[in-house]
Length: 232
Ligand SMILES: Nc1ncnc2c1ncn2[C@@H]1O[C@H](COP(=O)(O)OP(=O)(O)OP(=O)(O)O)[C@@H](O)[C@H]1O
Ligand SMILES: [Mg+2]
Image (cartoon, rainbow, N blue to C red; front, side, top):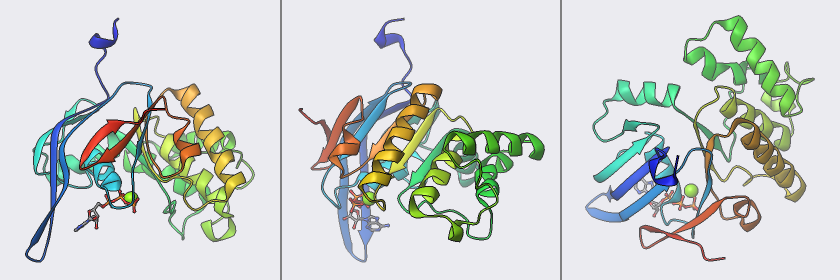
């Protein structure tokens, strides 16, 4: 198969996004095109406030858009109702967040099982898959720990395990190392790289961190509402 025959995981054409605050309208994304192929790691860089998280939230059907075409994992996101958005999120994609957003009243194991249970997997199968991925991120001994009992780096790894457990085609990561010190940040990067090499998901990496961005196969930045390649 040549490159032109491979169906992209993400295809965005002429995306437009405005935010309305009181009586003022802000044009955040303007005529943005974006394509991510299966198994690619792609960075989205740019100054604070340029629209990186906005773009990621649109791709994850967490936010709406005003015009253009957005197709993610074979689903057009244009006219989805709330129920269709929910099932898209449950079945097709995963997020890794800067704040990890673990549920405080659930153990590491329960946090990682959650997306599988939401997708209605049998609980004992969900449990064994969650244990397997927690072992891969080096937390096989910490399955019963609660988020408050884990360090920042360990919580980040639980967040990665939770994102990867469903073996989604696309992972959306917003500053995944943003809260970590250099060593933990490098450890997390190596771990994500290793798991991407094994599972071959597509990864969109929103980041300010040039070291993290350097793990991408393709680097982009948002300038004036559009995406342009970063020349190295
Ligand atoms: N819900 C909202 N309502 C109104 N304006 C918003 C909303 N969400 C974001 N914005 C504005 O849209 C712009 C883009 O925000 P976004 O969060 O995408 O930036 P970012 O590139 O991710 O920045 P950072 O690097 O600081 O995370 C900002 O000016 C922000 O204030
Ligand atoms: Mg952001």
